[in-house]
Length: 179
Image (cartoon, rainbow, N blue to C red; front, top):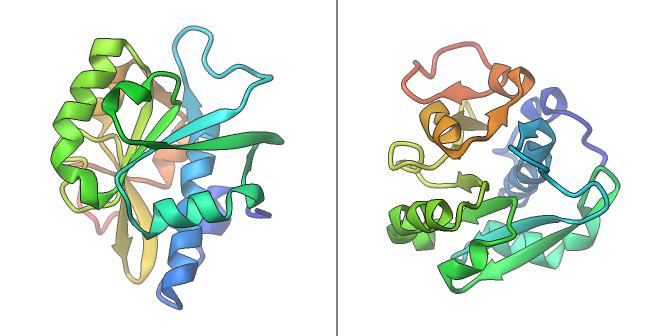
């Protein structure tokens, strides 16, 4: 996408257009895995990054429609619409649209049952409070993200300090200085 890091993304003002806000969220979503350490073999260096999309919202639509513009370390990204939670197997990231918010606890239980180590990302207010790992929030007209460290640690994933430096940590004041 031409957006190489979080510092440049953090400077984009999302209030200009809803389309720009969606593109910023999409860019974050596909860059998060660069800052995650998976237990065991992690992501196959030759394979695609698999992003499961549970529910339906404008971000899911833009990811599917514009999938050709996204890559992960020069490898393709597979955006997989999920209609059944048993399909989370093989996903590295699972994005939960607000329309599927009632399924969050079920999704987290299914990930644990299948022993899938997937980064969970959402886009509604209570996502991290309800057990999701990373949630998009809007502060001062800009797209930010909040991290639930407890949920990340329970999953066995590790987030890079670089990612944590530019995130809002669940339970900390939103007035903390963030890019």
